[in-house]
Image: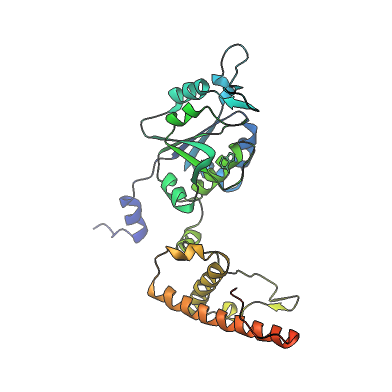
Length: 283
Ligand code: ADE
């Protein structure tokens, strides 16, 4: 009689191993990407064959003897614009039927965690990193998605591509330990709760007692509540469209109550000091 498989063995039998995520990056400055992608989690992800990353020099597809990739803008204006032909030629070689081609551009969709999850599910990502003053408008017709990493202008798409690739790689199953991923999903869409390490008291600031109590449930609740508190204070916009569990709604109610009490107390304190009428601040 054969022994029953253990839970781990059943998992191993049922799970079909995922194909690695293949990433290609088109840039005029390959060195800007190579070193950061060889370190830390991106490096480990490749060593574990969870992903492959190829950085391509766009100049390889440049035009003529000088391998030219840019030109003056029609109509006049400062700076050079990336021509469409080198990008098109590169994509003709690199694009697969299952590719998602992404142009890094300050006018693109603002990159958020939900998009990182979406990209982590894809089999093949191609990132185009423009330099210069921008891209010929017709390049946009060659791509599937334009992404911006925020409302500021970088000198090129390389750092933006690094941000996106890093956020995607750490989501691949096996990239980071399962506990961290589980913790992240527990407070998904909220800011991180406060964390502490040794010493127990630093410059008269003690570690909250609950964290050293050994009470797992109390710790979990405290963390969730403090995530909600921090999000309410710093990024209330994140709470607007986020569905809430009953527990979260209750904890957020407690936080609101505590914070308005604290605001009133602070206003009273100020009034005592200045002899002005007490008006709670909205913070
Ligand atoms: N290229 C220049 N600025 C950028 C930004 N904020 N996001 C993506 N690509 C860019």
